[in-house]
Image 1 (tube, rainbow, N blue to C red):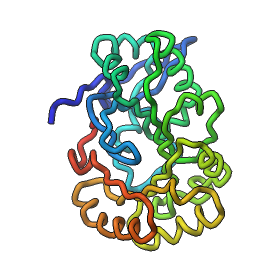
Image 2: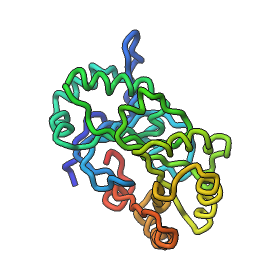
Image 3: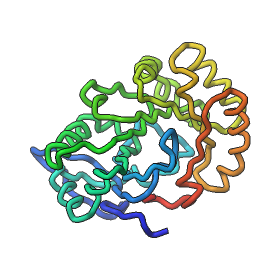
Image 4: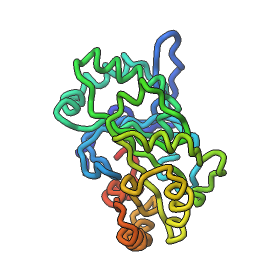
Length: 255
C-alpha cells in the first residue's frame, strides 16, 4: 500500500540544529493519508505527528526505534512543508490529526503553541487526538485544544516501575474529561485483575471508558493473544480494539 504520504520521515542519520528564539517541536516523523489504527476512532482517516521522547520504556513498544530519533522543526518550517502538500486540505475535509510519540505530553507547551499557530495561519483547527500514557498533567489551555484523549496507562507487564507509570491523580483528572478513553494493552487474564484493582475499584476511571487491545508489535504476536483479549472484553462488557496498523502493515513504521 503506497497511498500514505510522508512529510517528515524517520532518518536517524539526519541531524538539524536546535532553533534559537523561535518555538519548535522535536519530531520523529510526520505522515498522512493513513488511518487511526486503535481506539474509539479506529479506521478514521488520519495524519500522524509523532514527536520525540517518552516518559516510559515499555519493552514491547512498537515505535521506540522511531521516537528515539528525530529533529527539531520550527513552526514555519512545518507549515511550509505542509503547504507543499495537500495535507491542510485533507485536515479541513476531515482527516484527524493524531499527536503521538513517544510522549506528546513532554512537548505540551510547544504543541499548544503549534495548534494555536495552525489556527491563526489556516483559519481552522484540525480535529485533534492525542495518544497519552497518563503520567503528565495537562494544562487547561492544552486540554481545550484536544478533541479525543486516547489514554493508555501502562500495566506492570510494561516493565516500567510503578512510580514512573502509575499516577492516580492524573488518571482521575483525565477520566473526568468527557472526551477521554482508556486503552489498556492486555496479554493475559491476570491483566484484567490489575485493571480492576488499580483503576476501577479506586474509582479512577469508568468502565465505559475502557478499551482493551492485544499486546503485540507484530501481526503474529497480535494473533496469538487477540482471542484471549476478546474473551475478556466480552466477559467484562468493555470495548475491544484491534491494532489495525499492525494488522495491515505488520512492523512497518511511518504508517
